[in-house]
Image 1 (spheres, rainbow, N blue to C red):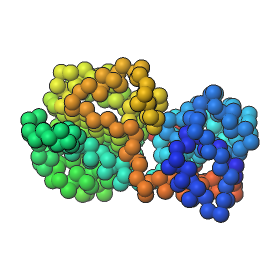
Image 2 (tube, protein in one colour):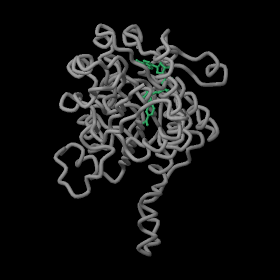
Image 3 (cartoon, rainbow, N blue to C red):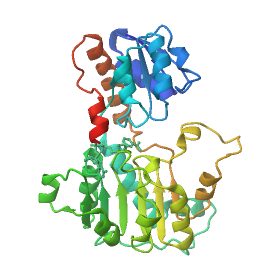
Amino acid sequence: MRIACFSTKDWVRRSFDRANKGGAHEITYLEAGLDDTTASLSEGHEAVCAFVNDTVDAEVLQELADRGVTCVALRCAGFNNVDVQKAHDLGITVVRVPAYSPHAVAEHALGMMLTLNRRYHRAFNRIREQNFSLEGLLGFDVHGKTVGVIGTGKIGRVFCELVRGFGCRILAYDKYPDAELGDAGVEYVDLEPLYRASDIISLHCPLTHETHHMIDGEAIGSMKEGVMILNTSRGALVDTAAVIDGLKTGAIGYLGLDVYEEEEDLFFEDLSDQVIQDDTFVRLQTFPNVLITAHQAFFTREAINNIAEVTLGNLAEVETGGKPSNLVSPDMVASS
Ligand code: NAI
């Protein structure tokens, strides 16, 4: 297949070249992100390969269809950036990589939890300046704490297994509870009791109409004073203005974000020479108890190799006809 691969970085090119055994596919690597201003670059390709922050809305899909694109291959799990119904109506097949390494994301969430608690980031900087004071580095034992996990799919499940190793009580909320996790001691409860009882809350559910801004002022108001919130899922699960208020009052004691609701204009790029225009993001960075990473939770060798292999496998399936195993269909949007 001729594939236009948008938002290409060096590591994308390397992993896809490695996975494209025998040059089975003809891949055009494009640095540009996909949106209405760049969709025309798909001319001459049957497929487009897109990433998390590419825009695949109705307008872009129409442009892709007009240029002969018949498949959008997402090299990520989430598909909230795609108008799946419009793609279906235009006869464009959408495929994704449902799981590339749940361990990568769950382990990153755990790393954020430990860093926020024990302040490794601050200790690292201090030691380099020969400041060996412990003032301000006081943490807490994770052992014995209550951890609330929202969404216990592939990543949430691994996160539960990891924190269980610390001797935590685990409360979970999911629209479809996992009986096996329940048998293993994870307590499924509604959101309200989870908010009330958890010392640490980690988000692992997809972004849908239902989950958009689920962490808002009201939710924060019902949480334990000084709660730790971790979001490695999708930025818009969290109402950023509300968490800033919560950080200012101390209602939130620690915040770990690998995703941000307006990250499209920031993440994955080196903007170190530029003035950031997003005042909300800049405000977030001023808190000593906020740790932000730029959507890197997935970024392990294992995960990026899986992404490339599964994406090219998806495209090979589409090329040979029949129903692809990793199809994204409109009913998945309706039921999510
Ligand atoms: P998954 O589909 O295996 O699990 C999602 C779980 O959320 C399911 O158990 C589902 O029942 C549950 N869920 C759906 N709606 C819900 C709701 N309204 N309330 C509570 N639970 C709900 O997905 P997976 O692989 O575990 O990924 C979770 C999320 O992590 C993805 O949707 C994606 O947004 C994010 N992600 C982030 C990455 C990163 O690098 N930061 C990388 C990969 C995924």
